[in-house]
Amino acid sequence: MKTHINKFLLISIDAWRYDALSRTNRQMLTPKFDLLTQNFSLAERFFVTAPATRPSHTSLFTGLYPFEHGLYGQTYLKMFDGIPNLFQLFADAGYHITGRSERSEVFRFLDFEPFITQMDAHAKHQHLGSLENVIEELAQPDTTPQFCFLHFWYTHGGYGMSGIRSAPNLKALVNQGRTAEALRFYYAAVTHVLEFSLVEILKRLSLDEWAIFIFGDHGEGFCDEVMAHGDNLHQNTLHVPLLAHIPGVELKFADGPSSMIDLFPTITNLAGINVDYQGYGRNLVGVSEASEDRWVFSELDSLYGVGFLKQSNLQMAHDRVTSRFTIDGEEIERDADGIRLWSIMDGQRLYREKELTGDFVLRDVMSGENLPCDAPYPFRAIHDQIITNSRYQHLEAQETTAEEEEILEERLRELGYIE
Image 1 (tube, rainbow, N blue to C red):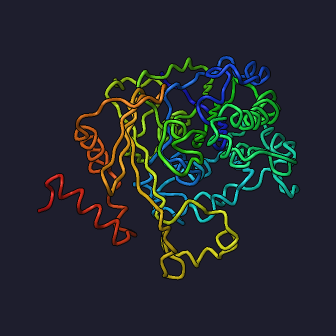
Image 2: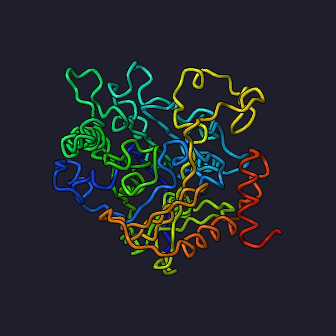
Image 3: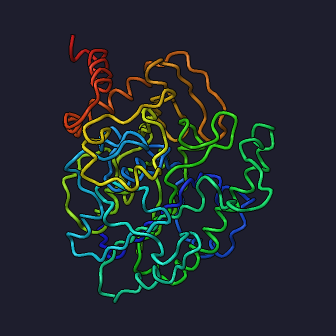
């Protein structure tokens, strides 16, 4: 099937996990949003590549895993050089570009940063800003090709509770076994975005013209094992919704897993944009190859911590960032509690391993129950194949720490490539 689309809308909802949607959770009461998206397809096994905003969005815009695009974790400063991104590709193809975020500074120092501005430039607090300007921006002449990205932050961290008197500590509630109570505040923030902000945008668009993708950039923890998304690889932080609508296409997602990296080849293919893409992402439209044996990959690197939105980062001149992890030639401070984890998912199971210790767990994605795993070696072999078969390994030579070189050397030694 050959379909050409010239209007695209990508909506990223920060920290939007799989059960914060009425189709997967009856507690979610969003009748207007449900009506507008009733014919959208839901990817039931959609996974992000990292449980953090910066690396996950970089995978979205490049179609690459974090180890391929260089932004291993939230606090790595920039990407590897020379990687095409959706904004630049669509700008070069003559599309009108709109990029808006309620927290645009989170994209600082990334190649696509110049394309993303505040949701409302006149608002001091972005979640209090108006959507009128965004809606007017989308109201271009019918013949104007458009590529639009919107990023909603209201569902992140504070869950809209800032300034509320007597607001509870949600982590304390979870620790006290009152998780359902804590989740109600989180669900309320998601409801605010879906039922009010997104409804006002979607109801003004013609579905005959626009390809629309609505997704979470990562989930959120709210359990004993992980509260904040950047602390661990967990089904609550990696498994997120993807709602998709493509004009003239009855989109049916494969039974196997899909990944954030799949949106890059899907969107460029729909637009007819030729790009030399050699990543692991698959076109979600009319996929012919079987996906039952597919495993998708995610990683967490907090060696430099998980915090990024500091004034020292946000006000720093761009030319002071001399590599992914150095400022003025000096390596940024490491986090003593930093870790490296990786996971692979086949849609049903999630295997997670701590890179430096080899500690591992295998569990059911939907139920969260641990599964028996007598030998980790088959899963490690899948992981090693993903790493060694990547067509972008050469980019690592641009900038690597001594520790990263040691880890890579050990991987190659275990696989028998070096002695």
